[in-house]
Structures are given as structure tokens and as C-alpha cells.
Image 1: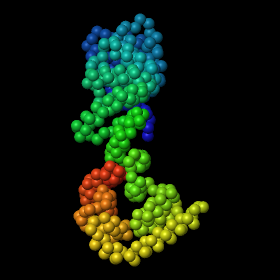
Image 2 (image 1 turned 120 degrees about the vertical axis):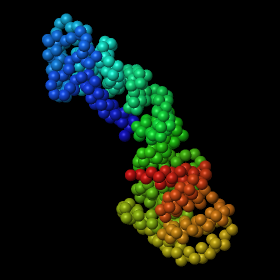
Image 3 (image 1 turned 90 degrees about the vertical axis):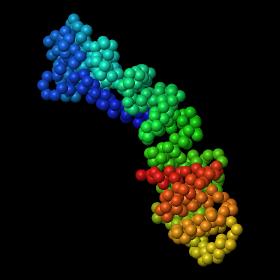
Image 4 (image 1 turned 180 degrees about the vertical axis):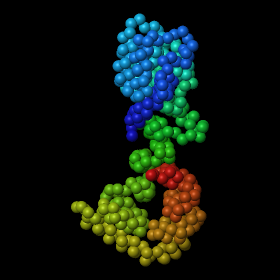
Length: 428
């Protein structure tokens, strides 16, 4: 959902929220019996409402209580038509008209009526607070963001605002095109949330993402995507995150297979090309069992073995099957050779190959031995694969520990961090 649409839905819900508060604050939702025409602040005052005004005004308030807002507006026209109205009668009509118009969705009339009632100086502080919040919501819904900002700022200045008020203020700046101010407000809110130990809202993060995108601030956008994947993981967020990782300057091409492994865990291998690529890369990297499994999964999912390229898929399947069978035949000699190696690279690679065949415990033991031996050709790659192997074994704590040791600036550390996020916050 776009930030704009999210903001619109939020404003709609706030409309009814503020309307309910207003109806209560203005004395219109009394229980059975007559509805009080006089606010509590004026109950003992000498101000009064003449019968010719009181009758349609009372009827309008009854209509509001019954949620018949347009009928209420019609009855208020009758009250308005009475000549020689006192300032207090005008005030009572305006405050009632504001609630009726707000319920009817007539933002312009509601705002005008509430501002008139507010400027009368007759409202109690509690009533003023509710009306100020209502005005902010009304102008927001009318897309009059400059006026919405004025009333939202007043609400916050008067200590009337809440989290929803602050959210609307940031959204108003955003929708008015003032990205810098919107970003500043959001950063203030996020800092307050972090200090209080609260998670940022999805709306806040989406708005920040949109601002970063409009400002072409790629580092900030990427950092926010990671926060989204942590707090509100979705397939779309992860797809964007992985795509941006691969297109980042300095990302090593050799890690394409590792990206495919992450995509597989995320359920993002979906096309024929996806399965063909990962299988071929696994075979080329010396992991035939992994390549075979990917081909089998592609056939199972119906993306391989059909269409004009079915024969090509079959050739890949035959190659994967033969490579996996040959690997089993030479496994013993490969283990002996790896054991004699001065460095641990061969042990790590062979151990991971064993993990892909289903011999997880044996493979992990060999990988651990290889890493302990040291002198690795690519130590960050080894630790990354070690973490993936631990995850396949269901050893989450060990996996995260291994991932945290990956420091490579070529994409390995990013992949390790993404695996940690996924392990801690699975996609629903």
C-alpha cells in the first residue's frame, strides 16, 4: 500500500474517531431523554436559547445522535432562519452544525462552523482541544495541507496531540511536498519511539521510504528497507531488498549463487530462468546435489519440463543427475584429499556439499574443522556458508553467530545480515 493511500485510510478512521469525541464533548450524545442544549460551562450563565431556535436545534442534535447527519443540517437551516439571533444562539448552531457536517462528510461546512464556534471564546479548554483536532483532520481530508499543518501544530503546541496527530503532521508535510520537514518530523518520532522501546509504525517507515526514494537517497532507502524487513517482513520488501543488493556497486558476481540460496529461502525462485540459473551455478560451483535438488523442485513446481524449452530442461536434469551420482562415487577420495590440504578451504567446500546431500551433521563437522584449520581462500564466504548450513540443521543461534563474523565489503556481509534478519523475522 502506498504512503498516500495509507494516509487517506488513516484520515478516514480519524474522522470517525474525532467525530465520536466531538459528539461526546459537545453534549450531543446524552442518554435517553432530552439532549442538553447548554454546555456545562454555561449551565449557570444567563445565556439562553429562545424556543424558536431551541426546537430545530434540539431536533438537529437528536438527528446527530441517530447518525442522520444530513437531516440534522436541514433542521439547522431552520434555526438559522430565525431572525435576531444572539451571539450565544449563533455559537450553539455553529457547534452543532460542525458535528453534523463532519458526520455528513461536508468538510468545508464543518471547518467553517467549528472555526466560528472556536473563535467565539465560549468553549471550555476540553472542548477547544477536541475541535482543534477535528479541524486538523477536516483540512487534511480536504487536502488543504497548509491549514491542516497549522491546526496540527496548534494541537501539539497546546499539548493536545497524540501519536496519530504527529503522524498526520508528517503526512501533511509529505503530501504538501515539503520532504525535508516531513523527514525531520518522522526522524523525531522514530527517535522518540526508539528511546521508549517502541517499534516504529509501518506507516512511518513507508513514508520515510517514499521520501528517501523521492530524494534519490539510496543508502537511506536501503537502510529503511532493512528496517521494514525486520519489523514488517513482506515478500515485496524482500524482493526490493535483494534486487538492490545485487545491483549495488562492488557486489561480487561469484555471490550470485548465494543470492539464489537466499531467494530460495524467501520463496522468490519462481520462473524457469530462476531455476535454470541456480541449478547451473550450483553444478559449476561443485555442488551437484544442490543443483539436482533445484532441478527437481523446478519440475515439481511445473516451471521446468514444459514449453518450447522442455528438451533443454531435460538435458540439464540429466546432467545434474549424472553429476550428483559421480560425486557420490568420488566422495571418499575427495574427503581424503581435503583432509591432507594445508588450508581449510577444501574441507569447508566438501562439508557444504555434504550438507546439500542431506548429510548435515557430517558436513557441518567438516566445515567447522576447515574453518578452524584456517588459511582459507575466502574466509567470509566460508563463514557465510557455515551460517547457512547451521540454519539447515535448525541451529539458529550458531548460524547467527557465524553470520556475525562475516565482514566482507563485496556483498558477503550484506548477505549474512539478511540471513540474520530472515532467521529472526520470517516472512509470513
